[in-house]
Image 1: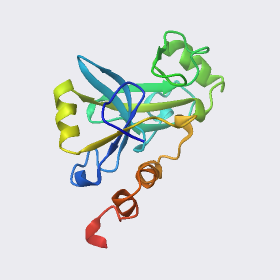
Image 2: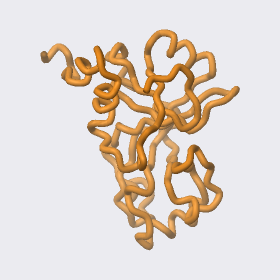
Image 3: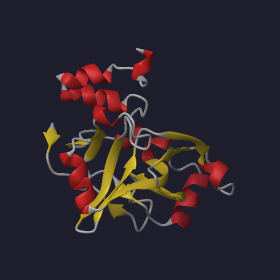
Image 4: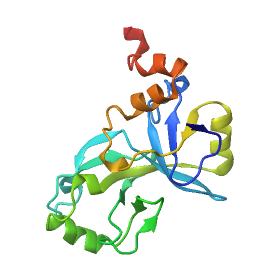
Length: 185
């Protein structure tokens, strides 16, 4: 279902019209914050070449790291579905939480208590001022939709954008099946 207004817990799906935007082309962003200060979210479908142990050797865990967006790419962020295990988490919606106590998280990971379906790590984030995102929505750069996934952290990142477009129907279905580089068609 297409929605006009972004809010915390919703998804921003890149319109096919932003093919030339390397940061956001074919991206699906989970909004973790939306308010008077602006919006913050994480790109769900951009796995990086890194795993957690590559960045933090003292954590014995090979969970994949995702490129969360072009802002503060030297910082590590995480969303999860385990607030009962990770204190100080911030609730985003009914099943997803942001951040929490990193020392406790380190112990949980080193003791193999969390699964990849419980947590997702990101380098950097995507951020907009309120007016900036509003302008991009008016320019048809994004489609806002509800997060209908029961466990967003388990979704296949390679097909997420295509699946969203297929659900939108109409012209979107044509773009969903287009090659990443239209010149190759």
